[in-house]
Image (cartoon, rainbow, N blue to C red; front, side, top):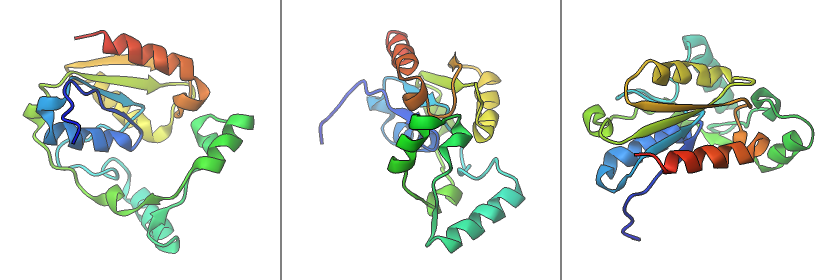
Length: 172
């Protein structure tokens, strides 16, 4: 509706799935993509594709027991404690389970035309994000920025995230 051009979608965690789909649907409007400790799917993968069968089954059972949604994780898993952990606990909501297993088909060649950046949060590294860190580090065409903080850098290191985003915005 806004007829935006040169958009820079930024996706954190599962949001990497979302910005990948957006870029595939509206590649002509996208200037670049920024993944913040996010999932980076290959065509046809779902959010659960890189999880073991055991983890997938466990999450399926958890979602079934919680009305079809995954309860929020304890922010301590993301390296947050004290006031930051309490702040995030008050704001988290369950995640619908369907998108966890729904595959995202997209045109990899079209997406490769869009500049892609990855902000990897490394201390402590979130186990689920490690496979995606490795994926982008091993693929051509990615600019990678490491931030020595946990999975929720918007909470634990907001100035570092802003600095990284501003630096990436000036590239291309």
